[in-house]
Amino acid sequence: MSSSIKQPNVITCKAAVAWGAGEALVMQEVEVSPPHPQEIRIKVVTTSLCRSDLSALDSHAIFPRIFGHEASGIVESIGEGVTEFEEGDHVLTVFTGECKTCRQCMSGKSNMCQVLGLERRGVMHSDQGTRFSINGKPVYHYCAVSSFSEYTVVHTGCAVKVSSAAPLEKICLLSCGLAAGLGAAWNVADISKGSTVVIFGLGTVGLSVAQGARIRGASQIIGVDTNPEKCDKAKDFGITEFINPNDCNEPIQQVIKRITDGGADYSFECIGDTGMITTALQSCCDGWGLTVTLGVPKVKPEVSAHYGLFLSGRTLKGSLFGGWKPKSDLPSLVDMYMNKEIQIDEFITHNLPFEEINKAFELMREGKCLRCVIHMPK
Image (cartoon, rainbow, N blue to C red; front, top):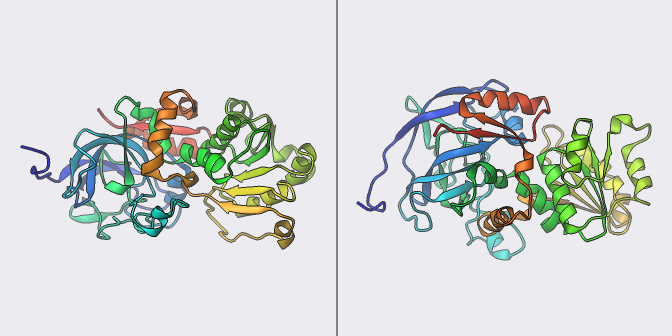
């Protein structure tokens, strides 16, 4: 019987469920509904832990909830009307989708899909319902992905078909943080050869910006972080100078202005601290200095800056997922990895089985990992 006629059933599987802010995830059985029209159900193969999963878990969000959004897997079943995926396809999930028909998708200027954009309410885009339940009661989604489960359901616009030759346990990093950093450097800032760059925050996103800057031929790539252990690792990704603000006896923006002859051409805020956005603006040069902010702040979401910074020619730009249109652009990044043009493996500091997912959260809280890849049971 063909997959278009076969009716998928409810699946019972293991998921790491969050029941309250800051609490350890609970490994338990959940029911996963069959995919609805224009949805696919995915057997998750690997999922990596992103800082925004930790931030969301620590916030007073909707519970119970299944977090996780940076993932790779294999299509297990397809919903009515699905033509671009088949059972067995290898896919990446994406936290912001691409419908290809809305004003934003059609503009050629943006990746801010009006139909499948960032989902914040813990439900599916199509019907505002959930596909997870425990004893008949709903368990909420995260970013319409929820990959901390052996199986998940996503809209077809929030999944990207990739080559079956690409290792799923590596390329899962491209579904969020690594692509976000590369895109900020290439698409949003469009870094030019010989330029000076300063990056605040040397986690996965910041080091991905560094990699992008190095590939573009930046002459000076300054990394700023308060964790001294990041110094050596940062150089592997292109950082030419490391500065720990705790070791400086003057404001960090003054240090950067001095070593860049008046300020960097480009600065990137990759921490999620709106105060650092102001510092990043002050660290770039008059006339054409460009600051890109990628971090998601946990507190104080408002940005404040003296108007003189803008009057003198500086620009502040925001970046979501590095400006990539996920379905259109991610396959080319997978190809770049397969052709050894970009680094992914070096970002993976830990590999853990699914049952040790809480250890991954501890490692991230303690600043001891870049990316921790969680492997689902075979």
